[in-house]
Length: 172
Image (cartoon, rainbow, N blue to C red):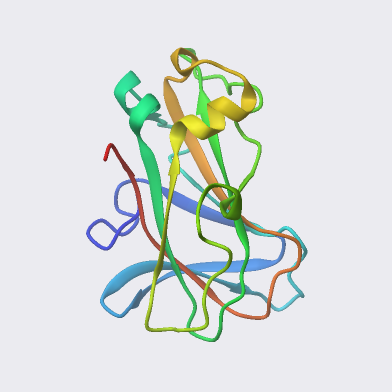
C-alpha cells in the first residue's frame, strides 16, 4: 500500500484533514508520509486518509480472517502522538459495511501507547483486519474490499511531525 519499496506508486494516495499538511519524504532511506501542523493550528482529532479512491483493494477470506495491516511510526522532533486507525471495509457491491469505519485506538489492541521521543527508532504496530469487523458485529464474509485507511490523532495534535511508512496488508 505504502512502503519504502513502493512509495505511493501503488496508486494509493493520501488526504490530510484538520489543518494538517501531508507530503512524501525520504527519511533514513525510507519513503514516508510526513504529517505536520500547517499554517493554521491543527484541530483536535485531525488525521490522514489513505486509499485507492476508485479502485478498492480486493480481499479474499484468508486475508479478511488472518490479515493484519501494519504501520511504522516515527517523529523527527519529539514523540507523544497518540493514534487510532480506521478501515473502510466494503461489501461485494462496493458499499461500506456499516460500523467498520469506527476508529480503533492503537493502545487498545497493542503495546503502542504513543510515538516515542527517539528519532532513530520506528514503532511498529499491526492491526488485525478482522478487528474492524468484530467491533462492528459483521461476519468476515461481508468483507470483499478495503476502500480506505485513516490514521487519526487522539484528541489534541502536538506541534510535532509524524512520519508514517511501511503500511502493508499481510497474512503472517
